[in-house]
Amino acid sequence: MSNDKPQGVCVSDLASIVGEKNAVCLWENIELGQQKRIQQAIVAGKLPSCLVYPRTQEQLAAVIATAHTNNWRVLPCGSGSKLSWGGLVKGVDVVVSTERINQLIEHAVGDLTVTVEAGMKFSDLQALLANSRQFLALDPTAPESATIGGIVATGDTGSLRQRYGSVRDQLLGITFIRADGQVAKAGGRVVKNVAGYDLMKLFTGSYGTLGFISQLTFRVYPLPEASGTVVLNGKAEAVSQAADILRGSALTPVQADLLSTKLVSSLGLGQGLGLIARFQSISESVKEQSNRVLELGQKLGLNGAIFADGDEANLWQRLQERIHTTATESVITCKIGVLPTAAVEILTQVELGLIHISSGLGLLQLEDKKQVLKMRDELRSGGGDAYGGLRVRTQANRGFLTILEAPVAVKEQIDVWGYTGNALPLMRRIKEQFDSKNILSPGRFVGGI
Image 1 (cartoon, rainbow, N blue to C red):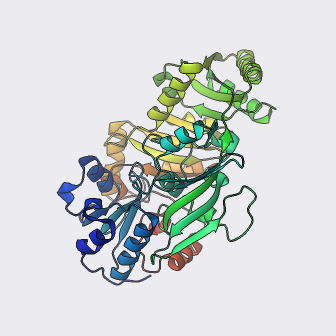
Image 2: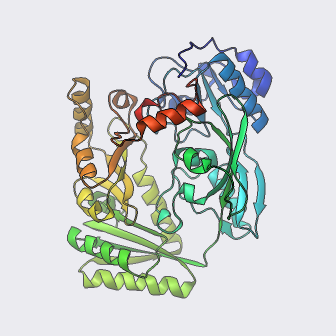
Image 3: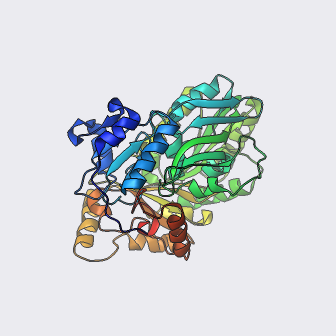
């Protein structure tokens, strides 16, 4: 990759493209919340020279072309709600936000597809789709502020993957700005699309290191008639057995997760490990399936309850908020993947955690202040990877553990990705092909890519 040193950022060049009102040129003029989010994403020290808000895809392309010409390092973002995820970006010159590129391009109601610009808020898109009794089957972190482009860039979805799959499973088409400022497209606007190389999968979860996502097309689904959630809790062995039975049954939950003991108690759901399953369909089906899970729990000696209507919505909102507590000096959030059959074993070894019963993916939180500070001190003294024990246990179960959110002081001294596979040389070649000057989110991805 190019080692050319970047020239000083000429703010007037960027302002001439987006307009002076859309280029914040002094750090102290950046809104405080955005300052904090940017600082959580970059190596401590050098601050970016400018925060730019293009209003159109054409302006975005011009901004990136200018950065490419001048070797300016760019940190892409939407609203900034996930800037603290991934590795720390090195030597950022310009932060570029798609937040003002946020229009609906097309909603093909009959074809069950929607095309939007990357900066549209997830909550705004869901409100638009609801007018046609449809929805996008994702449940990202910070749904009120998250942008569609940011969700794709981080591959962010939650428990709905049980029924609908991951972000990349629902993405049909993508338009992005290459590192040299050229516009490129892949996929299309129909569900059965086979033309072209599958860049949608490549860009999903790439953390802004390959290109700048500007427009996306998704498949959408009809809103369900009814919804109900069952929670079982009790002894770990019985919860594990219930999960095994549910996985192998004909029941069709749209969301199904295992919950750690502390997470269950913090939500006021009782004691012991938990299993939460949500059903959405016609009313009769929801009632029948919910009751069958409740009966299963009773046979295994587990406590159980059914949630509906406002109580159900409130439960899932509180669960989302609890598992996504903002990282502080005493909270570190980890993304985990293990064999589904090993999920209960892992959850008994952590305080706060959630793992999907079918994919084995989930989130863990380390929130004991003394424990976190001890880990940080071990890292500073050269004691190695203080998360190694937990990583070793997940890798022993054919899984992985990455540090999603943590204080900058911790991220500076640890490999947040912990990748041990053999694909890193291939990843580096792809990065070289897409961004030969290494100006897009340098250092944020696996292996410092």
